Amino acid sequence: MRRRYRYINGVLTEVPWASKPSAAAPFVWNDLPAYESPIDGRVIDGRRQRRDDLARHGCRPYEGREQELKEASKVKAAQEAQLDRLAERMAHEAWAQAPERVRKHLRYK
Image (tube, rainbow, N blue to C red; front, side, top):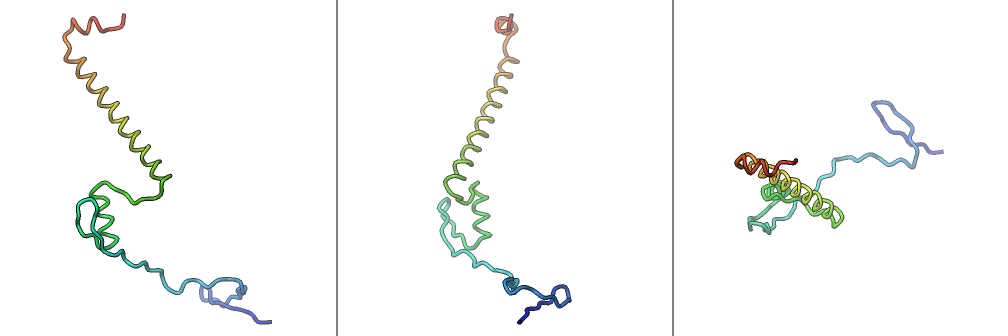
C-alpha cells in the first residue's frame, strides 16, 4: 500500500491521501485598472488611491442592497440624534436669554 509523507516542523509525518497541500506562495491580487472618479473627475489608479478617494469624499464601497439599507438607517438615526441635540441646545439657549417675566409664565405650576 502506498503511503504519503510530509515534513511538518522538521519531522517526517504520514498524511492521508485526501489532505490538500498548503499553498506554496502567498496569493497576490492584481491592482485595479485606472478609472476616473465619478465624484471629482480625478484619475484613480490602484487600490490605495481608491481607498484615499473614498475616504476623501466620505464614501464607502458598495456592498449590496441589504447592507446599503442598513447603512442608510444608521446615517438617518445619527442625523436625527444630531437634530435632537441641536433642538435641545437651542431650547436651553432661548430659555437662558428669555426675560424672567416670560420664564415665569412658561414654568410648570
